Image (cartoon, rainbow, N blue to C red; front, side, top):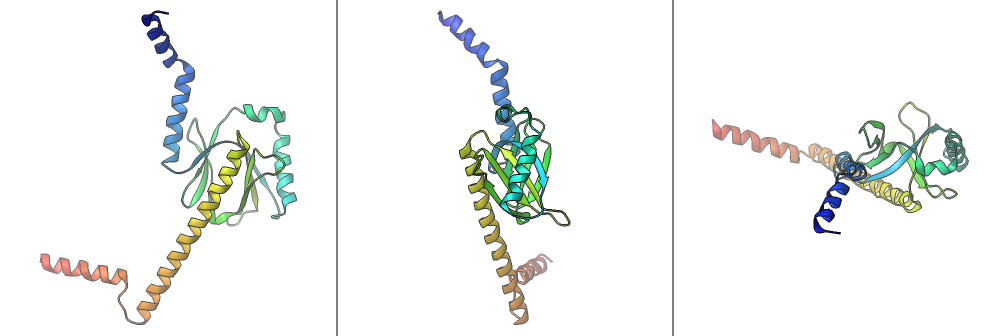
Length: 201
């Protein structure tokens, strides 16, 4: 094949719809993640449950899978979704449109896991204020992806817990200092600001 034809073939391939779709998906996922962990999944839906028993979760998964025509179609589901793990919450978005489908604060999630009998499934159970327990279920392209999501959320839970404990400790120290008449960090900052304003005058 001549050099001119090779160049023309490469240019044609670069302009093909498949390449454009791939680039579009890469750009979309980068835009949606903002640097936070993002996992491509198929969001199967949410089912209400009444307790944290394993049987309740299994029944919820069964009800969601019954709505699908065939188990074989799970790998060929039309809409792709992104599960994004933010510092304080987890959100699910449509990759194509960027539309947010769910938003769940980490403090509202009771637990998350990769399903043992169906390793491609990932789920988490949550309870938001004034609502019933909910089981959200996701289909992953590979079993290891479901495990990665579980590990990622576990790290996020631990970090959120550490941040909360640090905030509570800082708040307690501030209250104790106020009782003892000691200046807190906020008080010192206000004093410095006032002094600076006086010097300007």
